[in-house]
Image (cartoon, rainbow, N blue to C red; front, side):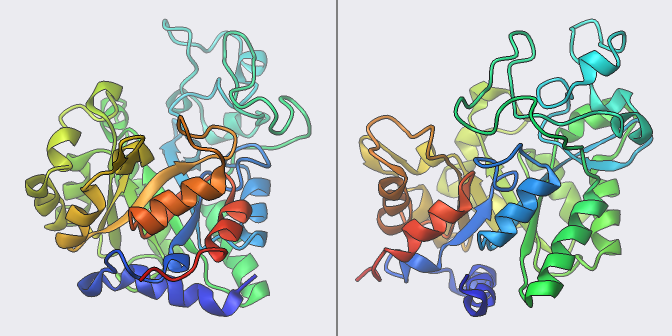
Length: 339
């Protein structure tokens, strides 16, 4: 499990004054379990997080949304219908758009739901055919506090330190609902010992205005990562990802954050490696790219190992979000140091 080297990799990622350029030891890239070991078990369940820990992930991700009573829960979407049986349990609680929003349900109500593999809410078809069967076994939506306690308990039992990697989801949506997802998330993190630069935590968001608020207004002292999407996705109104990927935009990010989290196709395409990682390193930012999936590879990519080599060896990223932390760790450990 390479337990003794986990903190060394975290220290490398934290050493922002000496960000490794291309040519560093490739196998030191962080393995970040994307929604847990979500290629093995339903995403964001405690079972998926326990599996990710057992598979040796350096960091485990938590997407955070709020319930109607303001409790941070770990759920990728602001909706419940793609990963739970909410339509069966509460058939009359959808909004006019037909969706079921977490912000409309109390924690006690969310506790009544079963989590399943991600699926199309209209057809019921699995989003990733071949993964854990839809509707099989019994899982539930955890609170952020419960997940942090699980990870800390597993760390205590294995004498490891696993970093946590929460994402502030849809802060503008939450504000419109009268909820402050950032303040609530920070309160839980601080209650569990995650608050300062040296703590094993990265906090991320797609919303650049919220990123600045986290640092300047809410007083977050831990590490911050600006996620980089595509403008056409409509994730964070007011955030211009085309600009943030330029050297000028990266310099603005570096004023408040410690790293960026770009889409893998912004890092490397069929035409080759882009300048994004080198530009980010020049600005003093680490780069953690998303998402490595063995069952959804970019066009022309033969397998997961080839994708890992492209991103880590050729592009020089410092970490990989992956649905398959065990296979990604194995691929990294086959890489030789880069000259």
